[in-house]
Length: 296
Image (cartoon, rainbow, N blue to C red; front, side, top):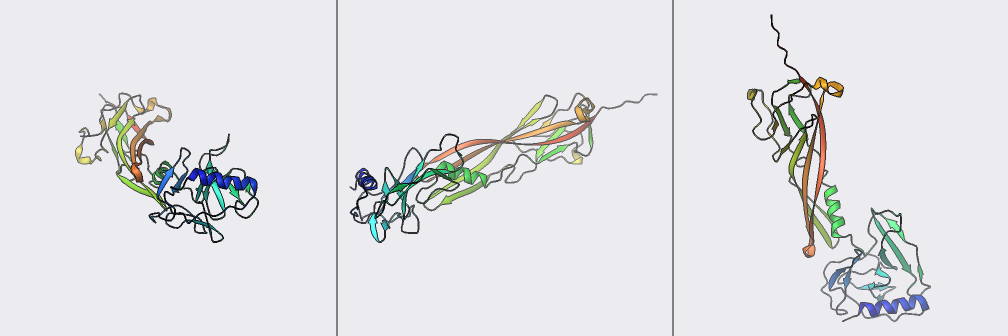
């Protein structure tokens, strides 16, 4: 077995001593390893006998499963613990964000000149995409897939209509105009060479805050109202009615807020999986009048 620690010590000694490193035999990756910082790279068990599968690495002489790593035609270690992953010219190592630094991308340091030159290390730099040879984590790919869903709050349907008026005591019909982005299910996949994650989002419920201190929870999107339904109550998502006219509210209308609770599940290679919840809201306003009884 090729010891990654031994290879790292040899390369680090070169970086300090400016000597020439004797190149090892061609190295091919056998499996992928990810450390606690999210660094993911291909590990060599037996030099020159890797399975040749797809892996990380750049196209400019950098490493990857089945190809090995080289510098000016000579094999070099693909991974050095202390220095990171070979990108064809330098070793790149992912590092935690500095104090006060951005957390929406990748911080890394580059060590160049390790072979045939004067070794030098750059300060930590930020980039929106992972450096060459370093794959984004499964969690990061899951967030990319979720962002591509463009999930929305409910497309509110309500009776009485927002351009009409209802009456105190009459039932209110509530519904969500269903689409993949307002109710689901919707599935998206985010991928980079060597890794992918598929995420699926499904709405679990909608909580309707009616603007008078009361709320209604519906586990179905609701039934759109039709004039033929008359004064019936909604069979699956409705409010029994307001006890006061909307003239008692600021602006003379009730503000109805509908909040969808989404459950998103995702899975990737190697048994990596997870889930998260997202709440998204929409609003509408309605006019509720008081029934006037005229007597003579």
